[in-house]
Image (cartoon, rainbow, N blue to C red; front, side, top):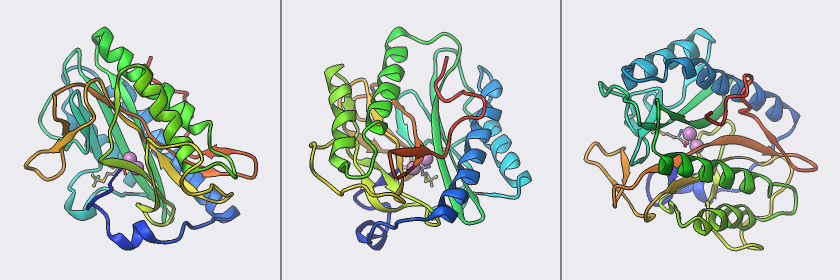
Length: 271
Ligand code: MF3
Ligand code: CO
Ligand code: CO
C-alpha cells in the first residue's frame, strides 16, 4: 500500500490513470495467479513456531522458481519478499526471527512481477486459536473489502468504493487507516490513482474499463492513527489495537470487475 504522503514519487500519484487493453488483462491474470499461488503455498506453513523469515524464504523461492521476481525485494531499500504484519502491525512488517505463536493474527502481503506485470495480494492468517475480537476484526475487514469491490464498475466513482468500506467498518465501531491506501498498478508497482478506503459517494475519479488497481483496506479495532517504527517501514497502531488487512489486484471490465489475484484453492478468506 502506498503511504500517500511520502512513500511514492509525486509523478506516479498525479499521473493520468492508464487504461489497459486485452494484453494487460492477460498479463495481470498470470501475475495475479502467481501471487495467489504463493499465498496458497504458504498456508500450511503459517503455524506456531515458524519464523516470519522462514515464510519469506519459501515465498522467494517459489517466485524465483516460477521465473518471476519478488517486487518488494530491493524496492526502495526493502530487503524481503513479503511483508508480514502481526497483531498491532498495520502494514509493512519486516520478516525476521520472530516465530509465530498461537493467538497471533498475521497479514501476509506479496507482490510478484511476471513479464513486467505486478500481482499484489494479501490475506489474513489466524495462528491457532485467536481471540473473538481478533476474529471479528478479520471478518469486518473482509466484509468491508467485499463491499468496496462490489462498487467497482464503469461509471462508478472511487469515493463510492471508499465509502462502502468506511461505512461498514465504522458501523462496527472499528476504524479505517488513512495514512496508507491502495494504488493503481500494472507495469508500474505503485501508480495513479490512490485508492482511499474512505470517502464520500459520488466523488473522486470515475472508473473506466481497463483501469487496474488494488483495494487493500487496513482496519483497526481501535483508532485509525498509525506510527512508523524506527526501521522506517513497520507501521503500527498508535493505540496498540489490533489491525487487519486484505488485498486484491483488480481490473475494471466493461460490466464490473475482474479479480486478478483469485486463489486457485479458494483460500482467500481464513477459515
Ligand atoms: N505490497 C505492498 C502494497 O500493497 C507494498 C509493500 S512495499 C515494501 O502496496 F517495500 F514494503 F515491500
Ligand atoms: Co498494494
Ligand atoms: Co500488497
